[in-house]
Length: 121
View 1: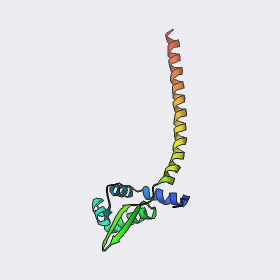
View 2: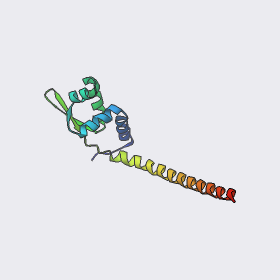
View 3: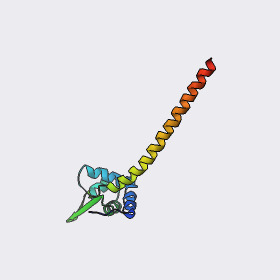
View 4: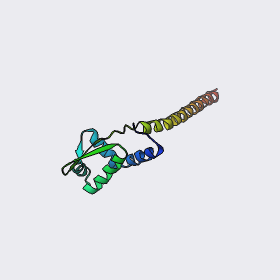
């Protein structure tokens, strides 16, 4: 079992911070691909794509296997569970803040309606 730490979160979030790497993950959800295929798909050099794949591999998001001259990439073992737990804590905070804001807005609407009724009389 992989132990997750703040360092692991840093590596995961750094890997996911780049649009190309997120695109590579999206591509790999459709099936395995060689680095050459990925480089072609993203109009990138083999060296550039290899660097992106290395970052994803260090984060556990991708695994690679070299057979002959072809390095094949596939989705890795990292299921992003710790990352999702970390995000969920902040989502709860923001959800609570938005609920409180909704309450303030509802209260202001009620006061505005009450003022409108008083002006008509």
